Length: 314
Ligand code: UD1
Image (cartoon, rainbow, N blue to C red; front, side, top):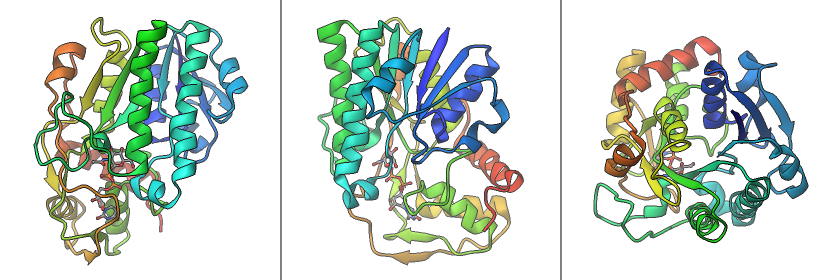
């Protein structure tokens, strides 16, 4: 089978590329290298076809779609605060880019498209865990444009019969997550700071919680979503079902790394939500999803990777 991974040079996209190559599948990556990096594909170079293009460039996306069976649409400008700073760029990449990918996939007659949605769709509703049937309450431009992508998925399934599945990622972390941007995921920042004997920053009191999910679990969800018979047209939470506060997480990491769990506490971030935790009943039932890597094991593997890859170098 031939897979097109948009954003395949990014953190989650490159993890998908590694797994598909290991399974002997044909992989084409489309990436504009805005937040992705070719380094993420260095150990499978020559085994993936790389297309340097932007998902906003429809003709380029149409060309990349030729001969493709499955699309794993990961390309996006991530980060809630980035979208608050620059909502137009966030909308262009995440909303306009997504409709281009859907349109090209429909025209090319691909078998199925799996979309990287976001748990930010739930917003700050007090009910935990979050179930897919809840009414969305997006609180940032990022949450709005990621949710729009889900709606387009559903509509492309209804109107054109394109098989689409949306996965709502809950704070994915792991090897190859880029720690160098102020918009980087919190765990990549905590780990690299602690490894470099620097003090991580916590926005707020650190009692906000997240359902942190190791990247291998998200990869599993994507590949199952390509083939699950009842999945098209639906949205699924891709978390673990548990949650940890930032303070707890910092303490766990400090223990793994062997340093003091110190942090600098500062003002809350605009657009942030308090708590997040997935109900994964639907993904278990329809996809056969089973997040095998626990939070603690994922943290260990991630720390090992930053240590040995040199990615934590200050
Ligand atoms: C959000 C989405 C997630 C999406 C991600 C994309 C929610 C619940 N989740 O993650 O689905 O994939 O955006 O970027 O909305 N923080 C610190 N110190 C730091 C960095 C962050 O304390 O140095 C805090 C943040 O204020 C936040 C938490 O850590 O409370 C997590 O932040 P981050 O890793 O950016 O992810 P979310 O915004 O939760």
